[in-house]
Image (cartoon, one colour):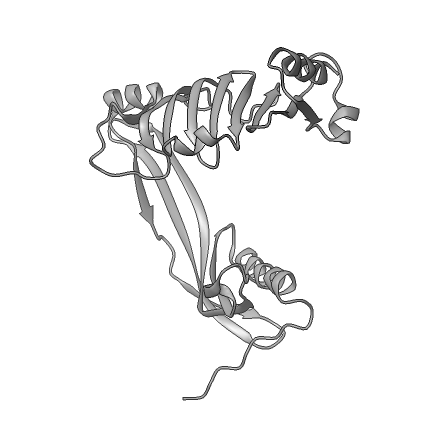
Length: 270
């Protein structure tokens, strides 16, 4: 109700030919969230003969709270205003003058992540989808206070991998054949030279499948229309869990992209 009133007022003040607005919250959100602090997400457009002005705001539902400004030009130039509890997006669409704006990004924004205090990011007139090693730091970069302090006091965090178990040969049964693979346990440790008490160790299992399990290609591009294969799975807690994940991944891909009647092609004889 309030959102539609705001768009109606903007249309009157800016003399738009017409306007339309849509509440992006679904019916479940409306039913389960009550009170002033419920999620509010509105999207609308003001239309003139020369083009449209898109306006969108999302309040009380930020995935990563942030504070700052950013201006980018992907399909249309978009000004994003982040204010911790939400964001406001303003985008002129289909205006003739927007086609002359270069595809560069202007940004200065601080993200408040729940772990490690977040960080500041900036970009001043840099290409939004291109990076190079020779870029000056003041044109584009980021600064994280937590990492800066920890690196200075205790040294940079390093990742050490260690395969402490011997690889094990496993069998992966599928309807057409049984495939072989190699399962191994890998330990990854993150530690700092002068802070041994901050080290973190993670244990994970990896399964490499020799030759892969055949699955149909996604068909989204010319190169993935034929037969593809799943060559391994990772982050499994045990050998049996890795085998089940491989079977599930292959079965899901076959059903999704090939259907119930899909069968792998027989290998050509040499």
